[in-house]
Image (tube, rainbow, N blue to C red):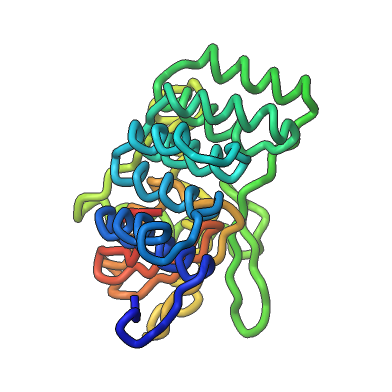
Length: 283
């Protein structure tokens, strides 16, 4: 903080600072700035600031501490707080608190498909297929509509949109060949598909086929096919949060192709360079 330069931070300043700490995984710095709001600057933290701290603590693995913070808040937790907790629980596979957060969100926003999907994903990863089926039944009963995940790229001012296992694109045969070749290359340098993230009770081969052709992977293959020799970054946009498997795939792809890959999902920008991501796996 620029206190020595008589800079007076406000609530918006602290949202920006805490968000930066969250994305960078700077836990102790985030705690210090959060404490300084009331201790030094005379500012009362709002729900936005608490949500940043829940994210920061949860992503660092301190989910118990995040829950304690929620319990001690002077505010009534809203959907932002519970969504923050649910997201970190999904990332850390903490079903206990994930269930709690999801149930709160079901009550606050019963038509929002996000909490149902995240909790269902957690159950699926844990092999709790009866619970997955029960959630799907609840979604149907409550008339909750799931949003389809898709990715898109722009070439010469023309937008190309992809969904998982997309076979509609005019270049689909070539795209799948390009992607299959890329999958072989990244596997040679250590990439292993996270089939545990597949949300269906099927065999291992079916899981592998399901996870191999997510929309952002198809978009990447298309861009590499159309612009194989360019030094410009490959830019991909996605309407939902990138899954853990695709995130790992992009890191390995940037390594084997030597290309910078910029993926904008619903949470943030990811810059993949040389096998690493700018988010340091905090997203």
